[in-house]
Amino acid sequence: MKAVYVAMMAAAGIVMAGQAQADEALAKAKNCMSCHAIDKKLVGPSYKDVAAKYKGDAKAPAMLAAKVKAGGKGTWGQIPMPPNNVTEDEAKKLVAWVLAQK
Image (cartoon, rainbow, N blue to C red; front, side, top):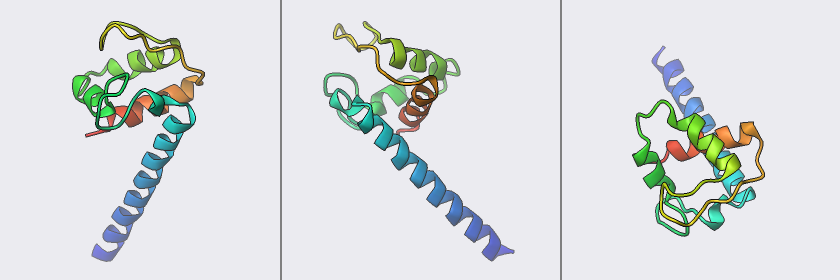
């Protein structure tokens, strides 16, 4: 029984790692990484800073997905984030990945 549990946890870890890499790949493919980095400020805030700011905010995923699609200004300074050419599903995946950063 313990071996089954260990195998299931290992499989879950592989799936999660693959998903994290896939979402980072999506961020790169959509040019998000031109202005953002995981752990340092570039033009926009780091993804870790975004995750920390919105930790525990149940409304954040929907609000941030809308900002990814439409763009925004003022939350992190005066440099605006332009609208991005992403689908609703892609925006949700990107935001989930960003909010999972620690």
